[in-house]
Image 1: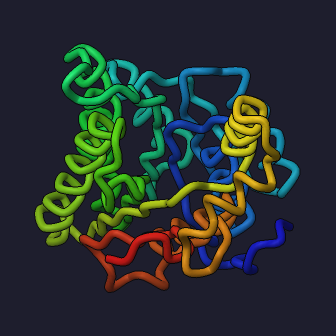
Image 2: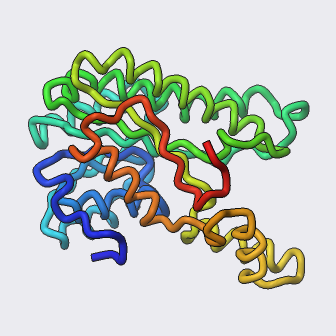
Length: 266
């Protein structure tokens, strides 16, 4: 069991589908949902990565189905839905976690192809999966949790393209909450700050080498901007996702829960 808050029964008996199961947040979400009692459907483009995470879940005594999926491809997304329903007969939770590294150029110099591809994955990919899973989620009075970003809360340089896509994802989530609510489906978002996990550690190590400082100093400088003087960990983002996916949040929909240790207030 991870060091996170115990959630051994929050998702007991649920079937959870997660897109974008990679080595960082996606993996943590999958393992934590399994620890919370869920059986899993794991989707990503890289099949070998899915198999690694599935093995971890099976050791926890839960079931895991792996479905290599490109959510920007309609046929591939349809295959994911069919595989999930065939395996378990139902779906209770969809977590839209697919991610691509954003263009980090100023908007004035960002080419439109990179903006389009970001929207295709971040916004339209999440919408496609939500549309396709709606019948199953309506049957189970299920939940959708979309992984957003604290980029919603600032307009720092070079994040323009990313903010455009994530802002559209939030607007889409709010609209879906209104549209799908009468069918018993809840739609919420989680907006993490910097996530202190493998990906960020590698980035900070790179920055430390580039600027001749230490990773600890970069961490302290970054964390200084938060109320808690630290950065949220991967497990802490998973806590928020599991809460919103669970019956604990049965009256919560159309909301965005920020997990940033107080770096931004909303």
